[in-house]
Image 1 (cartoon, helix red, strand yellow):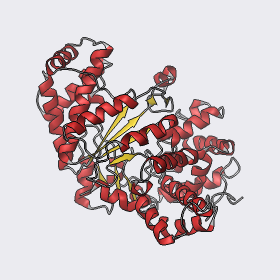
Image 2 (cartoon, helix red, strand yellow; image 1 turned 180 degrees about the horizontal axis):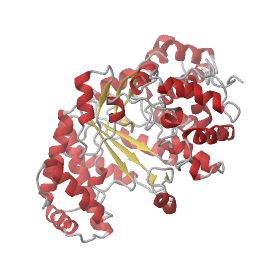
Image 3 (cartoon, one colour; image 1 turned 120 degrees about the vertical axis):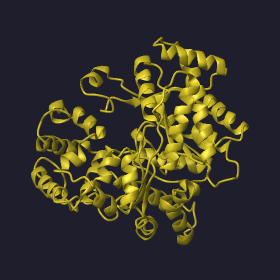
Image 4 (tube, one colour; image 1 turned 90 degrees about the horizontal axis):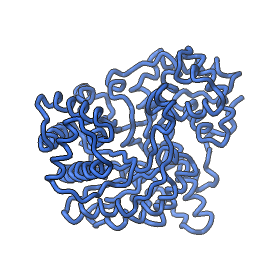
Length: 469
């Protein structure tokens, strides 16, 4: 059976929406400025043996749905064969009605594979063989897949100790897609586990070919790596905050003592942890400003909730959730301290709890300074919110509190090379919302005005904002 849902005018419920999407949005290249794709796989132009490897490896969205559908872990992250895992996913798909996975699955089969059939237990073998042949034959190697989606630029997510060798390789070979690193120093602030933190500091010392005995040594090592990332094309930082913005009052002398305690293997209390994170995050933000980087903050994930699941299967395997802490005041203090010093760089903030939409969007308006259009960005719908309802709410919050026309658009935040349908999904939703506003008499039916806005959001704003070299 051919898919009756994901068709040419999927989600486009008016003539204006259809014109905006097909004539303006669809043709724009993709800038995916935040993802978790493997730079090694891109550089080596990996060829997947089958669709399970390309589609199910690391995709905790699908894993969570399969678990909810009663699928044994053997067929999710266990030792079942690739086809057995795919079959279990195919059996799950009909049960994902009204979950975004139902749309994403069939959009991703349609592009890049050109498969229009509904996925279920009956079609699983045919779909598996067709898609797997396209992958294993090299027709849809990693680089070919990215080009088929019209990806022009993308940013991977990289730890300060990463060598960036694969980015360097791609710069030399000119693969036709701009791939740059993004600085993600979360481990440099993760002092809750002293042993793991010290192991990380030791790794950092090894990378810089030096020793780290003091807090000044630690900052110097991080600065070396920050400089190194910049030399290798990095223009974005990214920070995952599982807590309110750290804004404790702390002196340099106190930070020196805290670091010495950590290096001696001695645990520190929660207040000292916040003080240390305050000092590090502020310093990193100052460096970001000095280099003209864009800094991103992903706020509100509650990670590793199911400790048994994490223990048996691992982290980033579908055991995280939405947190509910308050951070309006701490976010304001953090941004204000940087603004007072003239050190607040371009900033994107993403929230995971939808209750915070208007709060975050309104807070960012306090720090727009007229120097850059859309300097402070309310980030796209993220993780649990990157679906139709979440995208619509994010667009509405941004529209009411700021300037939607200056928005830098969607990203994938994904580990899958087939996930770029997220951009198409967002573009269709955006065009449909604008089309509905026109039908309601709330926007003019000026296709040039609306079309330019759509193209700016889909591509031009991001291209100008990030200033990739």
